[in-house]
Length: 597
Image (tube, rainbow, N blue to C red; front, side, top):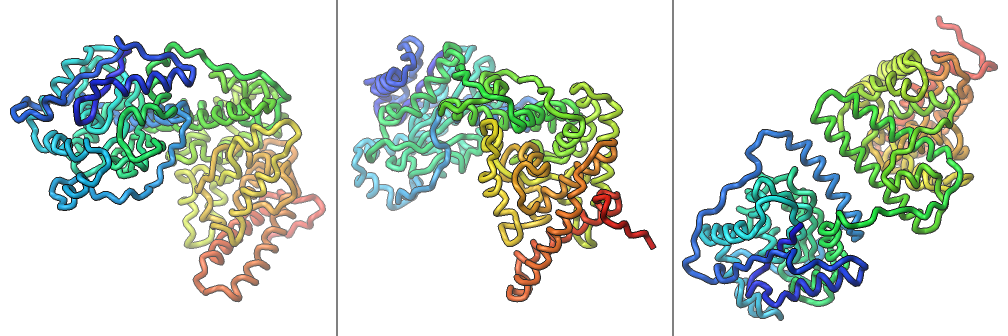
């Protein structure tokens, strides 16, 4: 493993203050220092100031092969998210205005601005930046020198400062084919400016996703070169972090003295030497939500196996991995706070996949599987898997110790439910838009997985559930069809299963919850099990209450009020579900049946 440092303008950081700052920060955080012999820091400052430095720009070694770039990028994004978790900094970037113009040489303000800067290097060395960009021969000479200094094979970490970050942009697609990049870390980068448009275009067209593990960029609102901007606006695949270097400046030492920046470098460099983490092993009893969480995870893997399109399968798999990583992050936070957790969550945190517990009766398993089959399993990512969630059910049922016939019957029942709802939809309403390729309903998530699954045994999490539901009801952000498919978080199946089963309090069910509750009751009855025959009363009451609310709001609101339209759409869904309950005899025994005319 080698650390490649690409310096900015000036003398090339010959004092190695950047290296001292990096190691001091690593040691302060309990990480090993990086040995000088493991650092490659090619100097090219003499080329930047020379008038006759000329060489051909090396040809790219990446991007020519015919591969599935979408799958490679999906895997790269997962690694990016993992890298961001390890660094532990806030990845949210705000465009805090540092009132500087773009670094375009034609800008008439540039000269006055350079002279006014506190750091004299900027006024003295702007010519080097302009020369690198506009002299193709100089660009080729710098890249050639850097490539000559690199190993021919193995793993490297690239650290690029200022102009060195732009050299990094040019270098990534030109690395030796047997060299892989464990991480790119850029600091104080001006690569977002239009001055470096050529470099960006070349990299975007030849980005080596398979050979680049992750790329983290750090910028400061006090750095005039970054203009308080990251790189994500011009490189969609870069993860930006905003750090505070404490004063107006731009030095690499100021950046590398920041703990998140040092962690980004040190964690990647020392990854193989780091000891796997272990939780505190403070355990509690298995909860319903934890059991459902494990079931959902296994179902996601079963669906991934059933997807036949290789590109869709790759993206789906990466989405599941990202969601799992999100959950693991919540688990570690809970463990750090001393919250007792079920054994299965400790296993997940430590990299294991726990077995599906023997936790449900057959009727309860029907409930869980029905909701899983109708849920968006990869939110917030949108991936059209057609009816794969249905086709995966028979084999998954066998994995759970049930029969294949059970899985076949359940899948057919859920398809029948979806078809029936489609036929009942109001003329002019495109129900299929809210279904998953006409096969499954993409339902709204009620709360993030961590709020429910991490709750200790006996804690209902009702407050979190109620808060999540408040914005979904009539008069909220949107109701009815407008919310179906708009996923608000992870764990839709888990939290919704708890809600439709009546474990979250006696609130009025939204159309999304009611839709799932009706699907569960229909499936349970179809497979010969008891079902919640109180749904008809709850659905009828919901329709009546919503009608009354519409009458009140509509009388005063504008004729084209979107809130009224949303409520009417929700009422249409609930009315259809009431009709479905009646047609399929899913009502209490004491309710008189009306004979068809």
